[in-house]
Length: 331
Ligand SMILES: Cc1cc2nc3c(=O)[nH]c(=O)nc-3n(C[C@H](O)[C@H](O)[C@H](O)COP(=O)(O)OP(=O)(O)OC[C@H]3O[C@@H](n4cnc5c(N)ncnc54)[C@H](O)[C@@H]3O)c2cc1C
Ligand SMILES: NC(=O)c1ccc[n+]([C@@H]2O[C@H](COP(=O)([O-])OP(=O)(O)OC[C@H]3O[C@@H](n4cnc5c(N)ncnc54)[C@H](OP(=O)(O)O)[C@@H]3O)[C@@H](O)[C@H]2O)c1
Image (cartoon, rainbow, N blue to C red; front, side):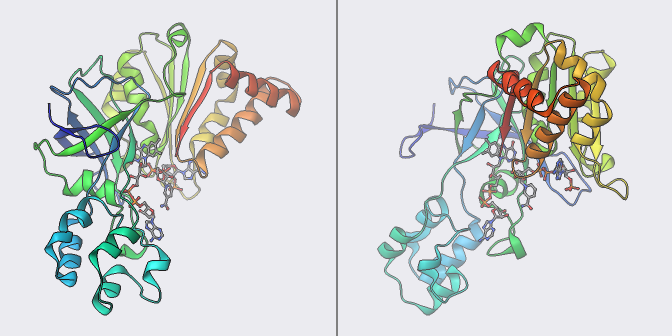
């Protein structure tokens, strides 16, 4: 087993077995990535995340090393410094690190000290170990930097989707167990409702690989049905077997936006019925807007379908959380 002990987490050097674009033709780039865990002894549960130690864009690193004229800085710049966020204090009047290096003579130790560390990024696990014992699957969208600057993409998503070599055991990973987001054993006998737009759908693929209970409902959202319906055949196969209901919100397929919470609202009577039957509700994906809007919609549905005052609806949802029947993994 190959491990990397110098990192704060003991990392396993995984191999990318498969990297497939999930949305050819889309403006977005999202990949299904299969990491090989063979020989690692790694255990994980659905709902957990994988931590990945990335590398910076190698071409940009080479440009910086040339400008510094110091090859001994190569590995540090590649693996240990965040080259996407340079502290303002270090840059001073200069617009970026390259200009700074070109116009100011640098002591390498000073640079090592002042650059921010390159920290691991987290990705929801999109598989069940019971289903694929020696693999862990991820769903990764390439994050775009503003104005393609200093490089086009975010560090780790670019590393996983573009730079990391296929089939070589060089990707340092570890499992970040989830303390709050999982399929509780009690949910085995209950319906579940999953709300996962975008990459938020990832953990629900893992959930559905191990669910035995036949009553499952997914709300998925993305930009367009033609390009962005991640894992479509997997969901449709489950629907055909009567193991899943799916409602999709393709936000850009019509002139007005349609989001997952609109689909929840359109189906509010049934959604309320499922909750009253003891359903578990899971929400995963964007924290900044989606999760808040879904939460507001949930309050509206409980209030109106449950014929409650807004205070009673709040108390009902608070109780769902207490019972661990309303679980969120938002980022
Ligand atoms: C629990 C959890 C689960 C997650 N699950 C997934 C998942 O399943 N799939 C997935 O794709 N992602 C997931 N993420 C997000 C993922 O961890 C990363 O945050 C994401 O891939 C971006 O990381 P990066 O290294 O590519 O980008 P970074 O280099 O960290 O940059 C991120 C973004 O910050 C902005 N930015 C960077 N520099 C600047 C600047 N100088 N000025 C202004 N803005 C700037 C840009 O928009 C940039 O693209 C999850 C996050 C968490 C916390
Ligand atoms: N850098 C950015 O500008 C930006 C923007 C959003 C999310 N993010 C981050 O990207 C990650 C997840 O993004 P992703 O690409 O997988 O998916 P996403 O950006 O969350 O998009 C998935 C779907 O959700 C829709 N959406 C947008 N606002 C919503 C809202 N308020 N409520 C419900 N649905 C909404 C999107 O529609 P439309 O896009 O058509 O509006 C799209 O159809 C997260 O880390 C998130 O924080 C970054």
